[in-house]
Amino acid sequence: MSAKEKAQKPEDLTRLFVERANEGDAAGLAALYEENAVIAYPPGSQTVGRAAIQALWEKILANAPRFEQEPSLPTLTAGDIALTSTLARDGAGARAQVARRQPDGSWLRLLDQPEFVTPAP
Image (cartoon, rainbow, N blue to C red; front, side, top):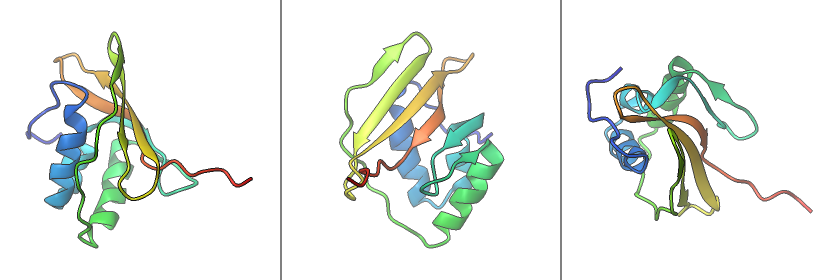
């Protein structure tokens, strides 16, 4: 894992994500996820595991997208599990992540739902 800053609270993960994405740091992004984390991306599929998540971000970041901080919704915490979410600026509705407190007290993402698609009627 990266020796970069660790999330000391669940809400830090979003800030660190945007910073690392804008630096083009796929390894740093992957370090924000647990080893067996799952991200619901690309749409309609899942990417499982830190190595696969890093490979996914390497492909995405090759196009040098620019990420912006999004307004956070209240975090729900139950012991060592937290649900974080933000309002998506790109029209995806909201983004949601489940994070887990690690033995050292830091937080990592376990589940990541970066886009919510409205079901067709």
